[in-house]
Length: 274
Length: 299
Image (cartoon, rainbow over the protein chains, first blue to last red):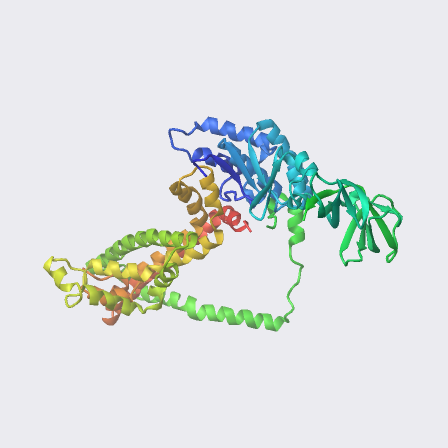
């Protein structure tokens, strides 16, 4: 770790609790051999610059126990940046913080990154975090590297069902590929099958790629179990005849009564061979 | 992790956190009985003996009291006690920190055995501890012939007293530090290493500051015990006046000679040492209250 010059930010901050914020940030510089160590004034200036960068200029004399979780993590980042690592590794840095703070810090981290140009590896389980922050995303599943690409690439052309599922809610549908088209329950969908793919396939559909439809053009059917509103949209849970639960999103405010039969049309989706 | 709020920054919050005026549900007489029992117990078992020591010491006036210390034997006993503590405490300080550090921060084969061994001096009677040294280093003992051949005297001499004291006070520092260091874990050290610190630098600047209060406390206790140890030292010392008598042994000899004033006078010195130890500890805790609180507030 030291030889590779990797800066590390821990999930639980790991600040030195007996040192002030300024001393925490200066730690890596003070730890250097006398010959490599910058002068005292130089260190002080660096610490000041970093405190400005993380917008905690007036906090230099405080102790970590006097700070909030979000502030502590900002100090941890400044401490890691102080030694000018070649790569910065952030291991779920916002994992211990609540949702609103996470969002603020995400935006803040992006700004810091744009300003410093520091190469950063950000490890997270939160797909929104990954997609918002990164220039390139690497999706790992079961110890395997599933896909590497830009956020747009992994969203538009997911390389595997694992990637697809990681990036958001999906509905898994049994389908048949035939003549370049994908059929669900014998009805053709707008989804085209890749060349050479014939026979039973798996179709993955996002909740917003479904639409309510009349029985004669529906690909899927079922009965409304319940519906509720979340973030301005209706989420409707539907029991399918095969016993599986399906959740769709709709923008209309009309609530669907429980037990009502509904049909669903597939507007788009992702095809993978079985 | 819960957010610690510094009371100083939020006086209003502190006020609201204060417990309600009355959380006591016991009736008056129950309270006063409990308090009276506790006070009586303290008085009988702690205050009274302490007062008696000083009362007896000054029973025949300050002149007699001071006379007890003007004897050459008393000087020798004080000197020997100081020498013994001056060797035993630093030795156990270094050993205790090393052992606690190894046990708390690393996993290795024989770790549990080492923990058990560190406890051994506490579980063995001090007299037995002393006897072990006699059996190993005495003239009839295991290494006896070799030691005689090389003209090295350990038993009935200062080295034996120092060894016995080290053995008896062995666990103080390690025992105090192991739980503390285990609770603190290794995250801060790992952070120090990722910032380019060497292991030694991390130990000095991260591990040691984090344990300083526990360490200070342990050293004070270790010192008090090193100066006050009787059993093990009694076995290996041989009670040679002016040569191998420590303060506690000197007290016993004087007492057996019915020289009560001198005996209690010397005892008052040991009692005074205990009081000084407590005062230093309290003063340090008061002086560095903020630091201690900062350490305690980490949860």
